[in-house]
Length: 110
Image 1 (cartoon, rainbow, N blue to C red):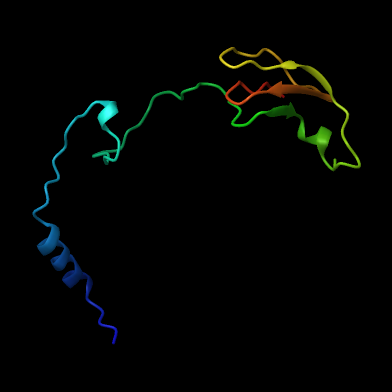
Image 2: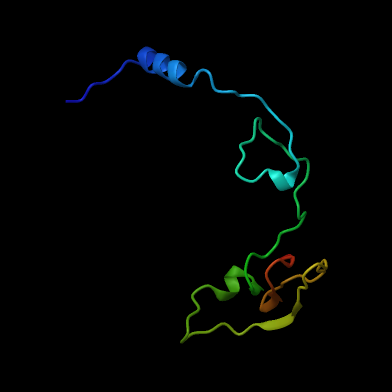
């Protein structure tokens, strides 16, 4: 049979069984942080990396240039270059163009 406890009773049981656990904080080097839990929220001031990065190898294209494409109706685009890992790209994808982008490289504008 289902026996439901009230919220007050559930809180009392939790406090009774787990109230003596230590909840102190400690500071450890990053290498020792695996499988630990943060004691407080961490906010960062900047993104790393500070650019839009590709998560897979592929081509940067404009969506409207490839909308409705398929194996039987391919889009024909001109490759204007390629982005390189670790280097900023000054390429911009315009209508009918594409740029090769490896994993981790900056995705060009456009």
